[in-house]
Amino acid sequence: MSVRGKPEAVHIVKKRRDSALRALVDGVPYIKFLGIEFDRRGDELTGVLPFSEKFIGNPMLSALHGGVTASFLEVTSIITLSWAYLWDDLEAGIIKVDGEGEPTLPRLPKTIDFTLDYLRSGLPRDAYARARINRLGRRYASVQVDAWQDNRDKLFAQATGHFLMPQRRD
Amino acid sequence: MLDKLRMAEQFIAALPYSAALGMKLEELNDGVSVIAMPYDERFVGDPRTGVIHGGAVSALMDTCCGAAVMSHPSNPGGTATIDLRIEYLRIAKPGQRITARAECYHVTRSVAFVRATAHDEEEDNPVATATGSFTVEGRR
Image 1 (cartoon, one colour):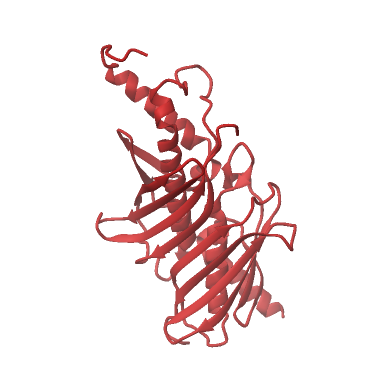
Image 2: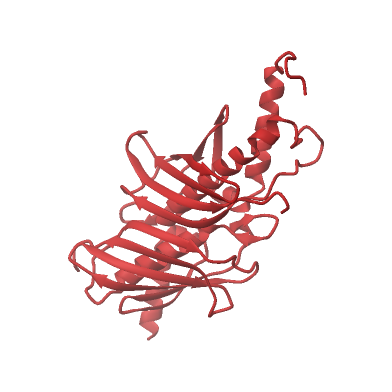
């Protein structure tokens, strides 16, 4: 590791981070089922849920199903948490993503509990979510997550969850 | 009896996301609802173990709690989730269906209170519990 060496070329940095994120997200079938994508700006992630007709819970109101909202928030929490957990190892080159095969990523955190606040009904359009890690300990983590649609400051749902972190020996 | 079953089937079919997850309503009576969700590889959350994603279990819990509210004898005209808390007690066995049972145990003019448990094919060992409060829309 070169401490004072030239900074890495930007395309190398981006490629490493984007491939790691892709490997993390693409490995989960339920994320694919929902079509959730992640936007990355540096280490910050935003979950994006493109609208689909199958997400409707109440056809009379054309509102998103509460289960879709719950799933979206839990997915965003878990991916944001895993991303924070693997970031240092990824940047230090301990997790290799430049090889041919799939990088070996750590196990995913396990949800202990998840509490959802449905603030307003979800509209039939794209939704966004961003999670904040309030504490990331050796065993437990506490995460808060916001979801919005058209206006960033008009949240339609919010949640807090506790997670069991993967252990190094796992 | 047949009518009741048909009504139950229609109830789920009318909720596109519940239908997308293959949910089947097994019981709906007096504020109690039982709904099953089959194991499906598309709902897996951890590819290394094949365990169903918590989000899919949440969707099952939310649907089951909402159905329990709708079947309460006070006859609410509609309902929406205000809040829902889910505890994941243990990992659901890959390959097994998950069944949720929700009970709407108290209703006021504006709010319905619900609790639920979910189990896999090992019935007396729950995989998750939930508690929630739901809105009560105009009476029918």
